[in-house]
Length: 242
Image 1 (cartoon, helix red, strand yellow):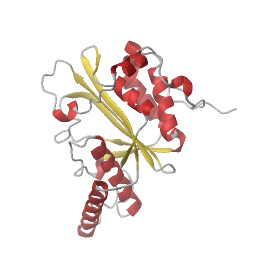
Image 2: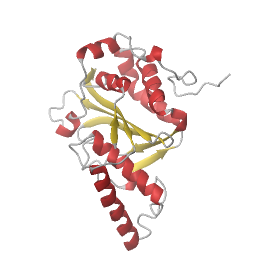
Image 3: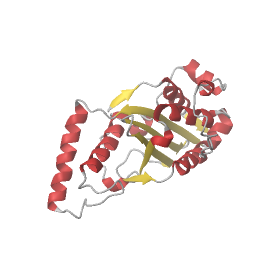
Image 4: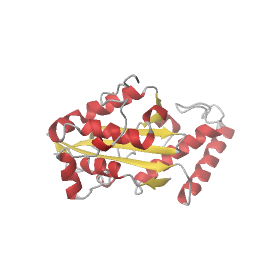
């Protein structure tokens, strides 16, 4: 998965880094990747493809179906591998190759995903920048075109996953645009600021940007005014086109 440099996403990630809200610390990142495979991605793809094929041969019913679709379908396997590769690319210090198909879900409605994210980040927006959510969705719209996306979520394993240790809540969403062959990965973790033991993997969520960029965003002089997305509002509802 090739990381795609997107200045507006980098600004949002900086704003979401190590942000204190009451008794919580928020860390998030929003990154875009091309689905083109190279190097380590190809090696991982071949390994996982063979693993899934072998499991299907031994027990056709074990992987016969999944929330992503039937694993007997090569397209479903490719999607699963792309999601795993995206997390590996975003968190290079952690190996997600053991993640199981049932840990992913296909979201049915973009409006529900938007509402979920807005709910978790509402206090952040109210505290630091009232236009944050609007600029967030304008940025995501510009990068992946929400109406064209399939959206998937990842449900962490409570015992072995870096997203699960000591967190208060977490979300992981993948916005996949097949036409653009692009995945936007949006992950966010809230932990208690009184928790003295936060894992190194969780610490790696912090992706600090330049201070002057962060200050500019907090003052409300973000990128929203220069972006499209006129048919979409920050509440997760699509406005009718005239």
